[in-house]
Image (cartoon, rainbow, N blue to C red; front, side, top):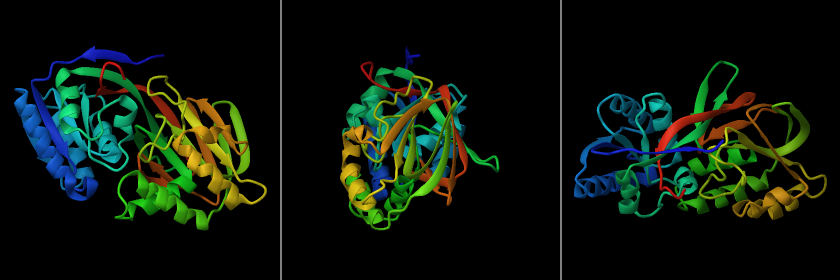
Length: 311
């Protein structure tokens, strides 16, 4: 399918910050970004939300003004909310990484630890049209996501990581995973990926629009943001020594080699339905949003994001 690339002239940008990203560093990063835009002769408006949701609501308002770009300072959760709020407005989103995972930036080739370089990506004006995913629950609640939707073990890891203040970055997910491993449990899943059905006891199931989540964990290593599809990774419960086996397999998620293990199955489709017993948490882009059952769909070409031409 392939993404569509465009050049977009940026004369005015709205810098949108979640002050709680990186435990308060988001504001400092946003102020740095403002200086970098001004140094390039770009008019800037700085908006600092009360929290990620407030920032998203402000993004929706800003996207309907004459601004040329919404530059989101934060992590994947902040980017997700901004994308959800601005879809259909025609205003492209820029990403200045300042979160824990930063996997949207990682998958688009946006510099992770260099504010000036991330601002330069936006100033140069090159954009890509990319897909998003959508999760819908039985009560009609739905949310868009940019990276990965997770259930089971990895959603529980996300829930634990959210409540941890230490360590920082990717290491937080590793520590949370080790703690969750102690109480490892499986659930019986029924999964439909387009016309393929899977019934099995599983430890986790993930749906990826990007290759990674959680700061570079390659959970769906073959996923692409521009193929109109979602990738699914299913991990069956090992019949013998489940904790030991899973403890050996889990570290290979960082390289994507877990997909070669017999307990792991990968699929790809446009619409995925998940049921499980007992129910399981669902996280998207690192935020908990509900419990199974749920339906996941690819939303092709839903977002326009500034990215380097080589991404």
